[in-house]
Image (cartoon, rainbow, N blue to C red; front, side, top):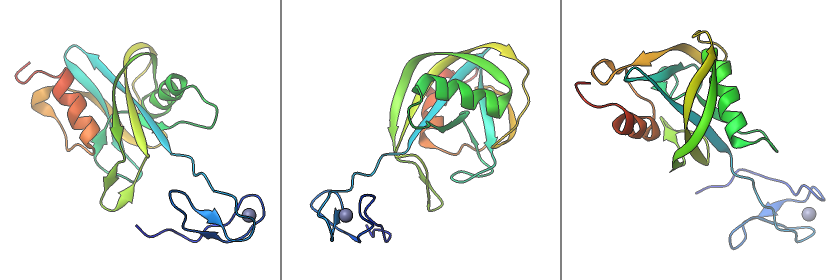
Length: 164
Ligand SMILES: [Zn+2]
C-alpha cells in the first residue's frame, strides 16, 4: 500500500514508513493516524427499509443506509441521528448496534475506516432527501434499488424478508 506524502504534526518534518505507523525523520515521533468512522441507521417501517441515493463517493448514485462520518468528540449515536436527519429529514431515535463493518471501497473510492450500523426508529420529521442524498425512500425486499455497500446488503438481508 503506497503512502501519500505526509508531514509531522509536531515539527513539520517528513514522515517515513515505520513498523506500524509512520515515523518523523526529523524528531522521531510516531504519527498515529485517526480512523475515519462511519455511522448509519437501519430504519424499518411496515416491512420496508429506509435508503438514500448517494450524491457523493464512495457509492455515488447507488442506494445505501442514511450515513455519514462521526465528527471528533461526537457521540456515534448522535452522529447517526444527525446524518439521518440531514439526509432524509426524519428525526430518529438510535438504538442498538446492528454490526460493525470494515473499510468500504467502491469504484476505487475509499470511505470510512470502519462503519457502525445502528437500529433506529422514526420519531418525527418529514421524509425529504437533502444534503449528500439525491433521493430517499422506504423499500421492500421485492423493490430494492441498486445497493452501494456490503453493509447495506447485510442490513437488507437481516431486516427484510423476501416476499414480505
Ligand atoms: Zn517531527
